[in-house]
Length: 262
Image 1 (cartoon, rainbow, N blue to C red):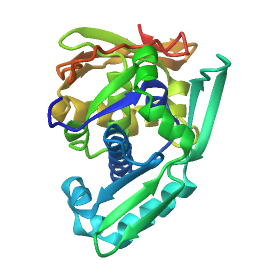
Image 2: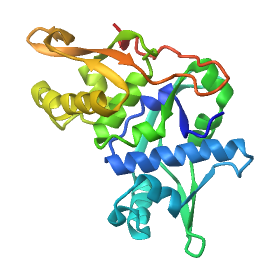
Image 3: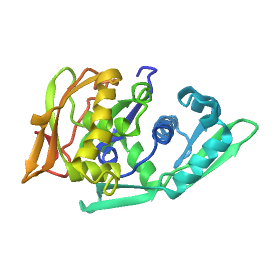
Image 4: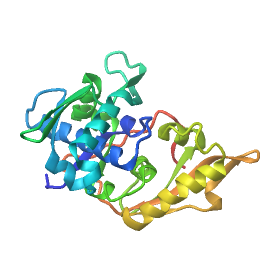
């Protein structure tokens, strides 16, 4: 293992339904990463610790990393719902999980350490490395992800990482309604033109600029049903490695047969 911070994100969690700001996304991903890392070191189950110094390493503005701002976001995390679908190991049934991102937190003011409690189901989901190998996960380099300023950029990048292959162009197709659902934009930007202008194009431009990934997207990438654009195809070449560890990476197909490689 190298010293990079690599979040191994289960593919069904990549497709989770939530909508946060860029800073909130970064904080959430860092909590998940610390939960995985500390679990490997034998830390207490269902908890992750995060220091103020760690937070300052990826949230640069003093206004955003002071304890009052972090506590406000952690309080919000308890109220904001994360929802994702998964296959139950015992029954084989498709289930939907929904919960606050975290269940509780404490701040040690002297040590400047946050101890964050995570729902048991979510915690087990992100620390069951055997299951992730079987059902698929996407390795996310947090240093790269935290370089994105746009929240939609962060989410679209992780969705494309689900399917990308290193140094190989592939086509990844999504229904518009599916992308809206992942980003919780069912009502915001209702017209495709607005959705494209406010979400897709800025995200594609930022990924192409700083994301170690090239996305080609033009009119030929829009698939219409009648007069409306129903699906989009991203032509993706990923230059970021997919193997940060010695264990092999397994990519599982999404539950939706209409989603993924075109």
